[in-house]
Every structure is written in C-alpha cells, then in structure tokens.
Amino acid sequence: EISRATRPVRRLDDRLIDKIAAGEVVERPASVVKELVENALDAGARSIDIAIEAAGVGLIRIADDGHGIAADDLPLAVSRHCTSKLSDAAGLSAILTMGFRGEALPSIGAVGRLAITSRHREADGAWRIAVDGGRTAPPEPAGRGVGTTVEVRDLFHATPARLKFLKAERTETAAISDTVKRLALSAPGVGFTLVMNGRTTEYPPGSTAERARQVLGPEFAEEAIALAAEREGIRITGHLGLPTSGRASSQHAYAFVNGRVVRDRQITQAIRAGYQDVMARDRHPVAVVFIEIDPAAVDVNVHPAKADVRFRDTQAVRGLIVSSIRRHLAEAAPRASRGISN
Ligand code: ADP
Ligand code: MG
Image (tube, rainbow, N blue to C red; front, top):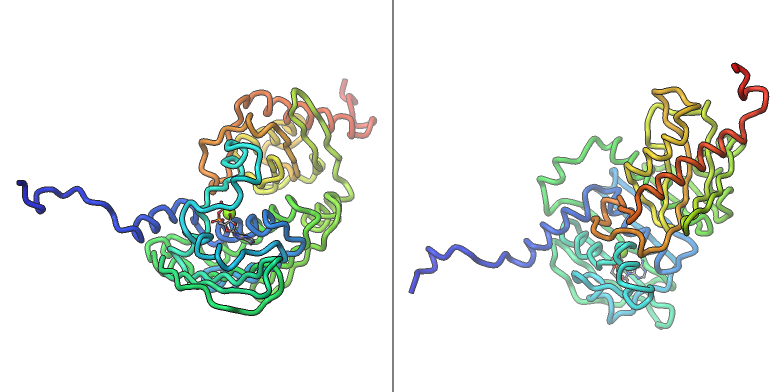
C-alpha cells in the first residue's frame, strides 16, 4: 500500500471549484450586470430597474417584473448547472448559443454576497435566499410583488486577486453603462432604469428606432440610415451612423445575434469594412446591427460570457454585413457628392 502522502492526486473542494469556474463567467462587475439582466429578459420582464453603487463592487441590484422563481426552485437556481430554460428552447444548440448553462447565479454566489428575493406569478408570497462565499442559507419568507430582485454586494470579496485586477472605478462604471446600453438596444420593448453614482438614466419601452434614439442620442437618430438585407437565410437590420460622424474608438458598433448582445471582433471588423471606402482611416462607425440566423448555424463552442460568436459560415455573414452596409451608405449619399471626381 502506497502512503497517502505520496499519492497527491485528490479532488478539489467544491467551493474552490465554484470559485475557479466563477472566474470565467464573472470577469468584472459589468459581466454580472449582463448575466442578471439577461435572466430578467428571459423571465419575460417588461420593466428592469438597475441600481449600482461603487462601480458595482459595492452593490448591483436588478429588480424585474418577470415570472419569478418558485420557493422550491430558489436553492436550485443558485446551484451549478441548474437551468429552467432547457425545455423552453428548440434544441440543445439553441440553448447553448443563448448561454443557458446554469452557471451565472452560482458563480456570482461564489465570489460575492448574493441575495435573491422572488415571487413566482402563481405564488401567494415572496421568498428570499442568500448565498455568501458559495454557502447557501435556506429560503425565508419575504415581501415583494411578482418578479425577482437580485442583489449582489461586495463582489469579489471572496477572490481578492480578482478584485485587485479590476480597473479604476471610472472604467468599471463606463463598462456597466456600455453593457446596459447594449442590453437596452437588444430589448426595446422593455423599460430600463439605471441608477448609478446618483445619476438616473431611463429608457422607456418603445420601438427599435425609439430605443436607438434614447441610447445613441437624437443626432444619431436624425441622420441614421436604416439597414435591411437578407441572403441565404441570414437577415440583417439596424441603423447606420453617417460616415462623417465616425468616432475615435471601436466601442460604438452595437451588434446582436438572434436578439442577444454579442461583442465579437469579427463582426465589429465587418461593420467597419462596410464603411471603409467612405470613412477616414482612423475613424470607427457608430452602428446598430441585428443579425438573425438559424441557431444551428452558430457555433456553440465559445464561452457565452465572453460574448463572441462563431458562425458555421463566417464568410457568408461577413460578406452580407460588408456588402449591405456598403450598398446602404452609397444609396443614401446625396447624388451631388457621388462620383463628382470622375
Ligand atoms: P441560466 O440563465 O443559464 O439558466 P442562471 O444561473 O443565470 O442560469 O439562472 C439559473 C435559473 O434561475 C434560471 O434558469 C431561471 O430559472 C432562474 N432565474 C434566474 N434569474 C431569474 C429571474 N430574474 N427571473 C426568473 N427566474 C430567474
Ligand atoms: Mg442566466
């Protein structure tokens, strides 16, 4: 018999496993906001209130009026790999594409103090469950109307190394407000309120165009060119800022695949390539681009939290983005300024 000391292979403690896994889902406060707001949208919320203190490290609170979570489901909701969304969607690939892996809540609970208060639409009352450093307390009765409030305090207190790696408060705050803008653009029919550093931003429910105006400003809305194209089962719609109103950073390309926020370099580059002929080299376009595609044509082997996507046929998607943007910009340009140099 070989002694225990010389057999060093052993299983990691569950809470340690959770913390390691959490690092992949929860990179920064803005990723917590993204996961929680997506959950609220998945629950059919019509109204989502977001409160942020100390750049999200102090407090992230998201309250929605969605269908809520039943008391019996609360302990499951905060357990790893538990999701209610499997049976809702068409197929496994569709589910994985949407990122339904049941990892967000347990990950957040592993690195911060998590409390969920929820009242299911068919329940008489609300219940509250708390998770701290991966330890879950049993649900207790609480008070609220139908819907869910998720509160995260002291994010990363359980992982000091991660806390140290966060950027300045200003940078994390900007990342949160950018994330909320993207989420708001993805769901124009849902009302959003963001209260951050004592400042309130409101996006009342409306059409896609109205939401683009709220998020990107009246100037953008006035000049923007409507985008619509379809080829080989890929549909692209959206709003294109004028080439003359390019920005210094590439942060202003807002892309969505099947209604989900994505931040994908290839898509951003394709959008920019569409502007290439008409925009100064050091500028980046302001554009909102919705891509609708068969979920089976989107590769699922990409981490959902990173928000980048792989298309089975990248060239088809890229080609349609580039050519449709180019054509819409050319058609919208005033005649006088076209071909004048020939
Ligand atoms: P996933 O979204 O991948 O299912 P999460 O860890 O984000 O995993 O959430 C786990 C489960 O908790 C969800 O499947 C859902 O049933 C429930 N849930 C989370 N947030 C909400 C919410 N705001 N409203 C209703 N149910 C929620
Ligand atoms: Mg989720």
